[in-house]
Image (cartoon, rainbow, N blue to C red; front, side, top):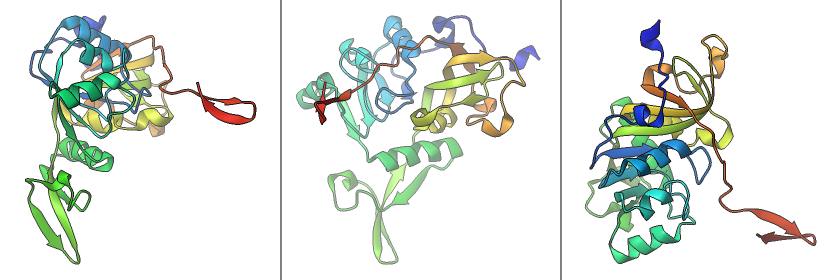
Amino acid sequence: MRGLDKRVASIEAALEGLRDGMTVLAGGFGLCGIAENLIAGIRASGVRDLTVVSNNCGIDGFGLGLLLENRQIRKMIASYVGENALFEQQLLSGELEVELTPQGTLAEKLRAGGAGIPAFFTATGYGTPVAEGKETRRFGDRHYILESAIQGDIAIIKGWKADWYGNIVYRHTAQNFNPLMATAAKITIAEVEEIVPPGMLDPAQIHTPGIYVHRLIQGVCEKRIEKRTVQNGGRDANA
C-alpha cells in the first residue's frame, strides 16, 4: 500500500510547494511541540511574506524566532508575544503585522477551519479592542462577536510517534494546537520523533488520523526549555 505511505526522505521534500505569501499554521505551545526541523527548513528555503498562525512566536534565536530574524514573516496571528524580544520590537515598530487573538478563540478558529465551519459567535472579547470592526449579536442576556475560521496553506506539526500512514500520537503539552492545525490546512506536514511500521500503534491512542497528514518526516529535536525555573536555597528563582 505504497500510496498510503506518507514518509518523505528530506526536509526539502517535506516542504515542497512552499511559496512566498503562504499562510503557515505552526503547532506547539511555547517551545513545546514545535516542528523544529521544519521551521529550520522554512528559514533555509528563503520564502518571504508569510502569514504564520501560532500560539506565540518562539524565542530569540529558536523556533519561529528564526523566521522573525530572517524577516520572513509579514503577519503573525497569535495569542501571546511570549519571551521573544524581537517579536515585541517588530510589533512596536510596525515592521510586523500582528493580530492578537484570545487563546481559546484562536483554538476555536482552527477547529472551525478544520470542520468546514466558516465563522462562529463567541462572548470572548466583546467590549474590547478585539471586537472592533466585527459583527456583534445578542443571545439571551449576553453579547457575542462573530469570529472567522482560520485555514492554512500548509500546517507544520510535531508529534511523538507516527506510523508510515501518518497516524500520530502526541505527548502531553504537544497536544496544544497541533491536532487542530493538522485538520485546518491544505497540506499537513508532520515531524515526529519516531516512525514505526503500521500496526505498532494502539488505534485507541491515535490523536491525529493519517487521513489528515500528507507528508511525514522523522526529526532529531533539541527540545529547548523556554524559561527554566530552579530552586535556590529553598526559594524559587529564575535561571
